[in-house]
Image 1 (cartoon, rainbow, N blue to C red):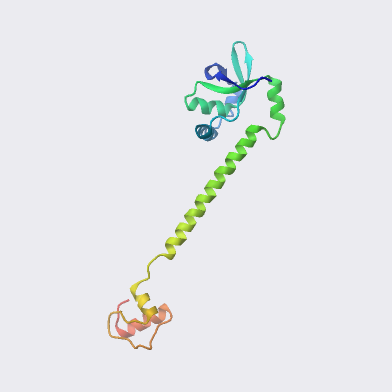
Image 2: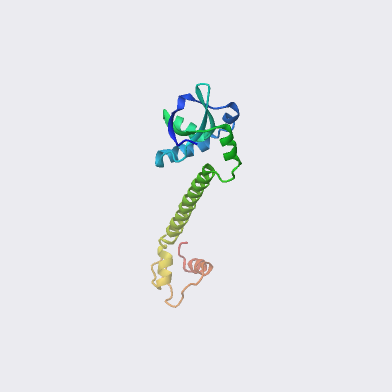
Length: 170
C-alpha cells in the first residue's frame, strides 16, 4: 500500500451509507484536535472513475472541511483493505479516540476536584461572627447588661437562653 499523500477534499466522494453515520459532536472534537496537534491519522480512499471514494475517516474529512482545508492527508487503498481494517478491533482511529476521551475525562475530573477544593477552602475561610468570637475568647462585647465572668455558654440554645435572660439581642 502506498504512503500518505495530500488529497484534494473536493474530489472525495462520501457514500450515502457512510454519511448517515456522521456525528457532529465527534467532528467538533476532531477539528479541535487537528487545530491543536494536526491530523495524525490519514483517511483511506480508493480511486473510482476520476474521483476518490472515502473508505475510512469520515469524521476526519468533515473536520478538515469545517476548518476550511482544501486538502487532507490520505492513503490510496482498495475496498478489501478497508474491509480488513474494519475487522480489526483496535484500529489506530479507535485507539486515538480512546486516548482523546481518556484525556477529556482526566481534565474534567481535575476541574471537578479543583472546584471542590476551592469550595471547601472558601467555607473554612468564612469569618466568625463577633458574638461567637467574644464567647470563645471570654470577653464581654455583647449588648445589654454585663454578664457574669463565670457564665460561659457552651451551646447555641444556652446562648439564646442567656440572651433572653440578660435582655440582649439575638
